[in-house]
Length: 200
Image (cartoon, rainbow, N blue to C red; front, top):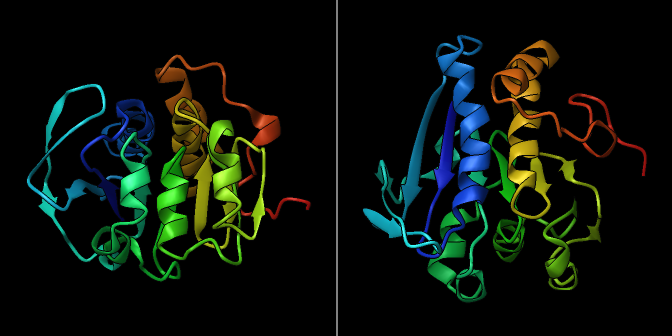
């Protein structure tokens, strides 16, 4: 199992870390011992919106080689959705690879053409923009639609990370990770159950 976390200049740290923390615990807590994960970008170092410089593990890898690709949002998405090199890099076929986007990351995935036939969510402030890319826009905290998963604003990254831990390793693993993180806010009512289709 291989997971890529996509980074870029202007990325929001909590969008990234909120998903990174629970997912990497799948390995550190022994639920998925063979889990491999790395950070990826178009350059060797990026600077977050908050000013933190981050060194990445891989520069411009073929994202289709990963099982999951996580795309956080950030304050530079207005430029990136018009950057054909960047959206072209993201534009993998969500078939064997599942793409998961947080907050404004949904707009990046949309600009890469992956939401035309799909239901998606994003930060409430970006819903109107998301309508330009997605077949249907939802207010749910996490939306899972045919290998493309989207989450709401910023803190929804934690919920999506926990949702993915359940998808990969089962509910008991998610509950154990959630307990270790001391995170009592997982919104069972607005997060899909892995493996079960949501009602329209």
